[in-house]
Image (cartoon, rainbow, N blue to C red; front, side, top):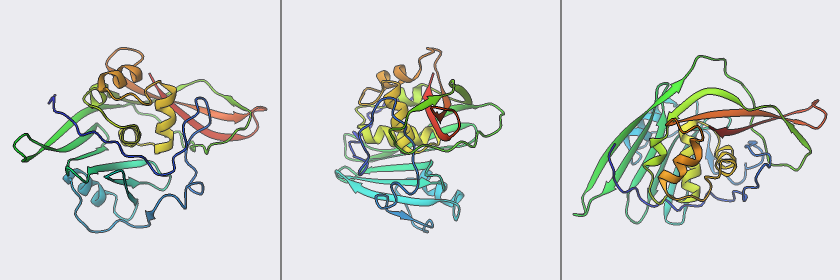
Length: 246
């Protein structure tokens, strides 16, 4: 795997609340409706990376574009109707370095445009194997933040796992960019990814090796995605799901 310095992506996702450990996190489309500047259809335009361009074409008319500028960074997210991240692209507006991420049925793909010491840019594409075991889609909804008294089911494997090196290659990545990157890797909402990182103790870590170790608790080199259901204290009202890794 190419050992290249990845740009520091220190963007702040607008108006995301601070994560509270064990709080119920997920995204409800009505909660952030005024905070996400979403477009109802994708536009025929050129983005910084071929990877993101291809994703826009693939999901044309079935996904929406959310983009904004924050702290000298331009963030573009390709979202499904549940606000799960199908692909993401982050560009440093000062250096014009870019990182994009998406996934297929068999791999997670990361494309980077990095600036060399001579001032020239080079494009790097990295592919990481993705384990997807046959199973029915759980169809569970993400959660909006609340302070209800809750009960949880046991953690269940989603039959999805990715090699830890995809996180191990990150260098000095900012919190918000790590959240977006994680959401893109697993195809979940950014606020669900934020809970996952906080729950796993990876929130705020900037070293790729430290992040990978925090997420790969089994130590087998693979990061598996797990999910649990959240109910009210009498098990009569279903609220949604939370995610973690092992």
